[in-house]
Image (tube, rainbow, N blue to C red):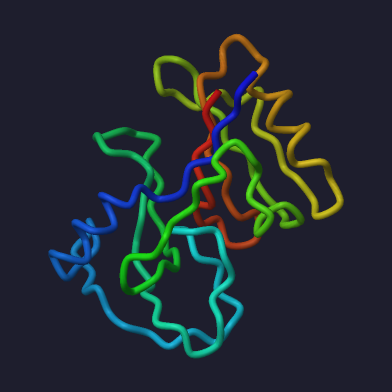
Length: 154
């Protein structure tokens, strides 16, 4: 099974940068990174002093009762992005995470929600969930803050 780990799409981020606000109307505002911030555009940790933005983001592009939006950090200006999409991002490999699966109709697949600790095998958990015939894709989120990490698709 070929699994893909997708960051926030560059075209959506560029549209927000051009508009000067995120998709929820929050001003696109320059922040100086402290050096701990996980960036959802390229799956890197921000360097101290790097120019970043804190935005509200949801992976959903259409109305949905499952829509969850929340704060995420991204580069203030366009970056190279994340291109190793067939590999679980190292930045999130040892985090406490929630794997939130969805079925083929777009509804949450409650029976397969998985809570991961730092020491758990995140890749094996993703593979196990996506091998369930009723699961179409999943969202990886922070178990501590609840914010979106990335989209996972088979």
